[in-house]
Length: 179
Image (spheres, rainbow, N blue to C red):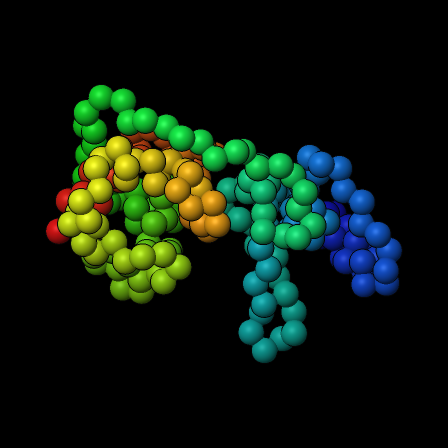
């Protein structure tokens, strides 16, 4: 099982053995189990036992580069896009996407109305509609924030295909409605 290989690789690294990785290979410390449906796993300590149980993640995250220093896979370059035509976004659907842990998940990093435990990794979006951003500017920020800020930690949702054009339009409509 891959978890065993990861443990051996980690032991080798601690003993000074070099960890070679092909440019497109997963890093040795990436938790991946080919025996599970979604392949990506995450550790969950069992309370008061000293044991760590590995749970299957809800989706396969291996196609995106990780934050591991051992991850040498290339990332897509920042992508500038232009909003084509009128926004035609659905604010209600945008709200659902922004608060959906498997899609936009905006509230993991941002404060949004109705969020019982707002994130603090990004700016509050409680009044995003008052910022005087054009729809096109806000669309670009969600598509790929790296265009304006190369050091951002915000995922490039459009560039990586995590959100579709229409889903980003819906989120923009929702954010523009927050006054």
